[in-house]
Image (cartoon, rainbow, N blue to C red; front, side, top):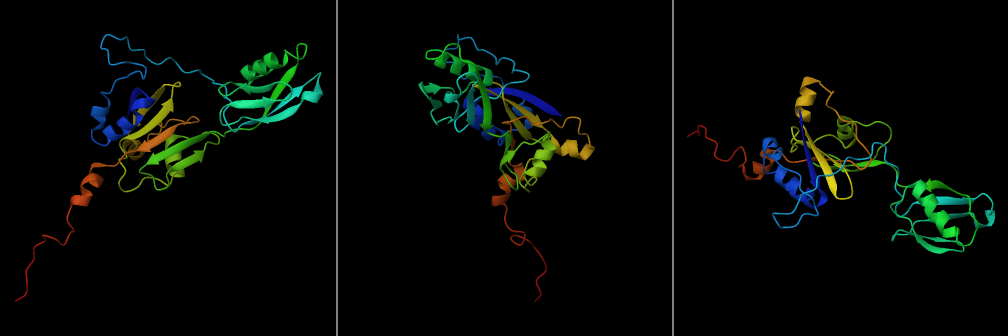
Amino acid sequence: MRKRISLPMSVLLMLVFALGMCSAQQASQLVAVSSTDTATSGDTKTAPGFQTRNPRYSIRAGDVFDVNFELSPEFNQTVTVQPDGFITLKGVGDVHVAGENVPELTKTLHDAYDKILNDPMISVVLKDFEKPYFTASGQFNHPGKYDLRGDVTLTEAIAMAGGFTDAAKHSQVLLFRRVNDDWLQAKIFNVKQMMKEGNLHEDPELKPGDMVYVPKNALSKIKPFIPNAGIGAYGNIAP
């Protein structure tokens, strides 16, 4: 029902293009290639590591959070992460926090204020942050970015994106999922067969940041070159 592939970000676009030119069987022959590999044939290729089972949210640009001091309330403040990943703190100045989770951020703030306060007791409360989402791309009636609220499966995501277009290749739906900063994992699902058999055991649950991509079918690629039905048709002509 599905095939599993691991690939780096650097070949994501190449894969999407290749899938439009080859069959699912050919796609299954793709192998993992590290984005850090060089052209030297003797270099060792490193496979992606396992993803954390319950990854913590990472602070990113645009996030807003409260910084509270239990013993020094005069330093309480609300800060916004700037586009470059820095925040500006009272009495401390600029500190880079993008990419850190809340425990790491708390330690960073503690270390920064430890220079002017004696063992500060700090708590961080996220106020505004990027909501979980998935992206629908390719042959959807309404492609775009959708909020991921609650448990959403692949088929439900397809419905949220307006379903397939007439040009969609239902048998080769791709689900891209980030493994780490350099790698994406791609799985191919035969949604056409899944729906035909009514077997949703293979219907995966989406995770935040997932992208669903649907390539064009073979007919849609040659359709522009097919003449109109009336051209070349034969029939009896009245005298």
